[in-house]
Length: 325
Image (cartoon, rainbow, N blue to C red; front, side, top):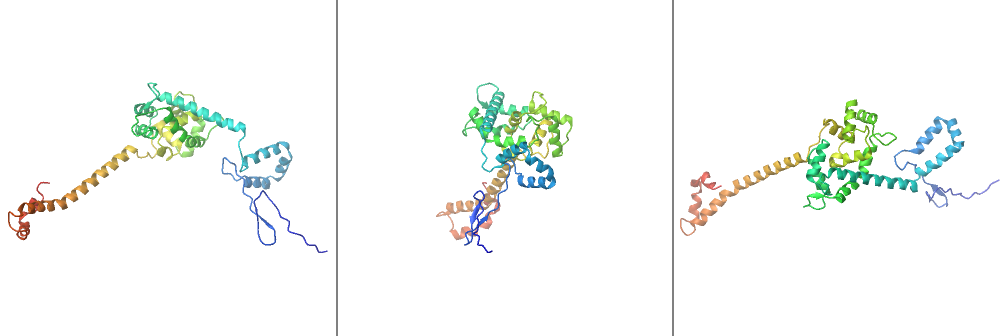
């Protein structure tokens, strides 16, 4: 028995587009789900688990706990994921924590307690952390509100802090933290091994003491960000944060970057040499012409004619042409 079946459209989440004249639909490729906080191909991982452990996967799919986990997983991997109130409250707590830590750090640098940071205050803060002195000038140039300002207030300090918050948080999370969110001795050693640096107990202890300043035996995010915030952006992004921390703690430089001061001095020397060459070549070419012009003006109407004067130029000599330089 012959029958005519109309094309049945298959619709999936609005990802389809009609094609052809038959009225059918072509299903576009379904976008892969990825965790919103990491570039992980979750669909590929799921397929591998199903093929590797088919029986275990079947049993998990039937359990209530697996259903709840799957629901939560789908929420996280949904491209239109929106944080709920609990997550928003956690973010609010985080920003409150960073503001309090930043204010405490500002007050610690402010030696006279007048609410204004001077260049000398920043220099002493750099010296306490074994950082180059020119970092203080770079921070002041970045934070000061106007070109002629000689001090910075809390608002200026907070502006720099907020601008670099996301960068500092990513750097801290890349260190390999424990579940408590702290960097402990074992975490420091693991980070040093990853970079090929000597992961000795002495180095790990030195790094913890350098960042903690009080010998707590761990480093929190607030302590780490206070260290990283003092670094110029070009320096903070040029190396792994563990390398910068290792260098400041052990005073051992790993491919030390050229300081801004040495780079400025080099440019000044180059400019001075270029200016001297330009001035010397200009004088060497134009001074004889100026000498001849002056002599011509002096002989107009009071001496031999112009033709006779040009005949006397070889007798003047090169030394007389350059006299008066």
